[in-house]
Length: 238
Image 1 (cartoon, one colour):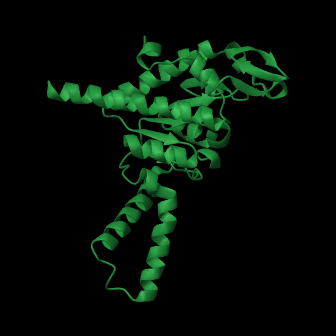
Image 2 (cartoon, one colour):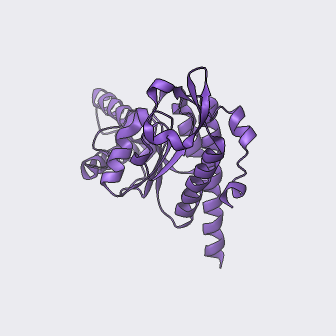
Image 3 (cartoon, one colour):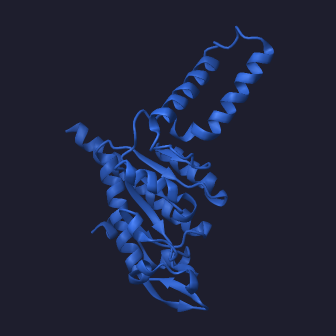
C-alpha cells in the first residue's frame, strides 16, 4: 500500500497539526466527507482520510518523477516560502515561492521568453559578458537580474509546461491550480476545510496554515521525489 510505502503515521500527522481545519462557518460543503468532528467551533479533519489521499498524491508524484515528468512545487505564503525553496532545491524540482504571476501557464510562451532572457543575462554575467558595458549600465543589468531572479529563479530550467503542480495553499495560490487545469496540468493540492476539493485532481485534506503541517507534507513530498528518482535509476540500469 502507498500509505505504508511512504510511512504515513496518523500520530505523526496529528502531532504536526494536519487535522486542524477552519471555523465551522467557513466550511466548503464538498469537504464534509473528510471531516471527523468539531472542537471549539473548529472542524477536525479525519486523518485516516488524509493518510489515504496523501498516499495517493505521493504515489502520483513518485510515478511522475520516475517517468521523467516535471512537477512544480507551489507555495507563496510568507511563512513557508523558504521551506518551499529549501525542499525544492534539495530534491531538484522546480518551484514558485513568490507571488504567482497571472499567465504563468496560460500565457507560457511569453513567460518562457522572460525566463530565457533571465538565463541569458545570468550566463553573460558569469562569463564576463557584461564587462563591455559602463558601470551605470552594469548596475542597471544587475538590478534587472535581481528582479527576474525573484520571479523566475525557481523555474529557470523550465523549457515547457510542467506535467503537474503541487500546491500547498489553495486559498493563496488557487490561480496556479486554475491555470494548470486549463492547460491540462495535473493539480495535487492541500485542501483545508474551506476549499472546494473538486478544483483539484488529487486533493489532500489537511491544515494549510500550520508551519508544522507544511513541514510534514514537504518532507513526504521530498521522499516521494526521491523514490521516483530511485525507480528511474533502477530502470535505466536495466
